[in-house]
Image 1 (cartoon, helix red, strand yellow):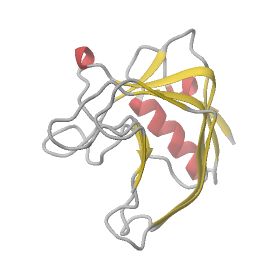
Image 2 (tube, one colour):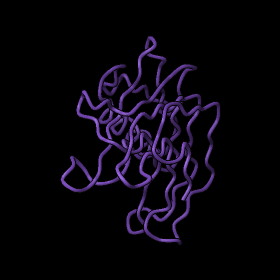
Image 3 (tube, rainbow, N blue to C red):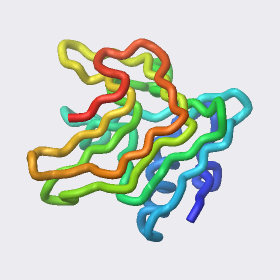
Length: 165
């Protein structure tokens, strides 16, 4: 299955977090496939950090990949942190986060042809990873069969460009 994020309301220069989540869920619920992101006329797809402490949702990423889901962009496609002028907060742009009690394993996931631009910063912690693969709260959780192909990380981030941990 291939879905286009535009069919879920994503548009360059806007907060696309909900559109990405909806597209990812549709692909995951169908058994897997690709979430396609058109180039967007030189625009950036903004995603919002979501976290605890009274912020809009729990978790640590703009969106979470699920088993069998690949994000696939045209050359030049950029995912970026939602700017503070639009209500953006510090934090990761994208990645995978899961807890052992909800999904003990994530597999067959990937980012293909995407540039991740992270200009966010953290205050005191290393929270600004641009691409974040995290094994949840238990060492028995696994992530396997990850594809990262033709991707770039741009911008300054407090943290790592690509983080596995």
